[in-house]
Structures are given as C-alpha cells and as structure tokens.
Length: 191
Image (tube, rainbow, N blue to C red; front, top):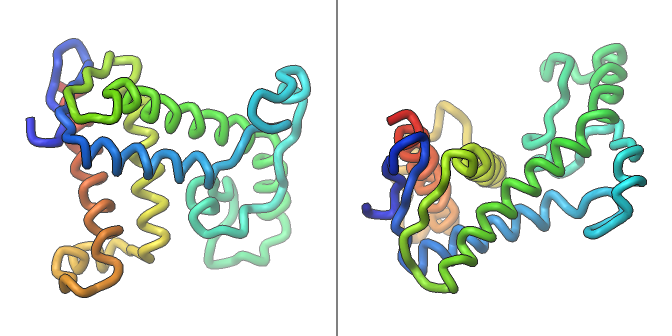
C-alpha cells in the first residue's frame, strides 16, 4: 500500500499511512469539525433539548458550509424565488441539525481511527461499517477544499499544472490526494 486504500475483504478496507499523511488527514478533519461547529446546546449538551431543537431556516453565509448544506429546493439561477426559498428553509429547519450531526460523527470517526495510530504512521484497517463514514468524511473535506479553491468541473484539470510558487499548491495537493483516497476507498469496498 502506498497511502491509498486496498480491499481487506468483505467490504472492509485497509490503508498504510505514514506519519505525515496521518497528521495532515487528522488536521483537516479537526478543521472540518471546527467548521461544522458543535451540536445543539454545544458539545455534551442536553440530549432531550437536542431532540426537539430546530435548525436554521437560512442557508449558511460561508460558501463552504453552503456547499455542505445546500438548499433542497430552487434553481441557483433564480435565487429570488420566494416559494422555493420558503420550502428550502422549512426543509433545512427539520434536517440540517441531523445532517450536521452525521457529518460531525463521520469526521470524529476518522480522527479517532487516526488517533489509534498513536501519532505515528501505520496500517489502518476499517471494518465495512466504518468505510461509509470515511467516504462521507473524505467527500466533505474535498467539497470544502473545492469551494475554497473555487474549483469548477471545467478547470479541475488545470489544477495539475500549477506552478510550484502558486500559493494554492498545498491545498490543491490535499484536494487531489483526498480525491485519490476517496476513489481508492470506493474501489476497495466494491472488491
């Protein structure tokens, strides 16, 4: 293994990460947790209150969060459609908190697994049940970096030709690596 996932049979996967790879991935997931924010009532809040909490009705102002929690209805070309905006707000009110909780749990799953390496590199073996969480977490990271880098389908190929002095280069390298991790995990799970 060279920093990509391989099948471990039965829908499970394994990956060998060196210390730097594990550290980068952990750091990105911690930043994702900070971006998503705590659950209702903060971390360790009242579970009963969280059960009855209502989410926001407006899309997040941060473009990365708006990509992670998009509007359910409406045409992006017609942002002033009041009916679609109202329907999206109502949908968001009842779903966003659960979606945030799931994304938070996905990121935490990755952090906990990486913490199991003890700050060093090593081989991580993911049971089949954890692979979907990892896929979700990797996808969220990639979407977030894509927004920050302003990547579009048309210019993604241009990312491979950035000069070494381009200040976006480290984020682009992380974006491309996350894509390779995601693809290799999908292939490993399918085997």
